[in-house]
Image (cartoon, rainbow, N blue to C red; front, top):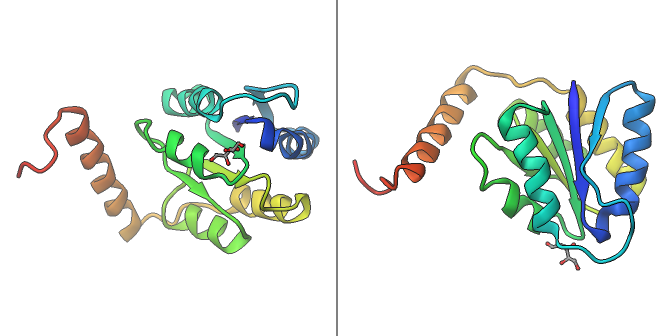
Length: 155
Ligand code: RB5
């Protein structure tokens, strides 16, 4: 599994800790940056990771900003992205089982490293359940297609 990871300055320390875990686990990791804790804009790094997942270059992505909210807003603009902001492992599990989330978003200023690792492990290990949830994802895809054709609101 290829995983792309990115953050802003508020998530760079947690990114480092999660990257060390993922590399130790032998996963193929693409670090989209930033490398340093100096101020950057979260949309720039959210775009890099979301594009990698949306284009298929990466199978999954991880994004971290201060609250996780900005990164979620950015990531969910991209076709095929189902980004889930998770503050505890139950949300991470359900985001995989029900929503087939392909980007995990974390609030670096809100979750500690121990909690973030538990969330990440759960998110990596949990498969999508399919079944009735697959039909709902198809509906999201249909909405995306309507938006891209500017047909929203038309029957
Ligand atoms: C940066 O100060 C902060 O606004 C950012 O990390 C994020 O929380 C935005 O949603």
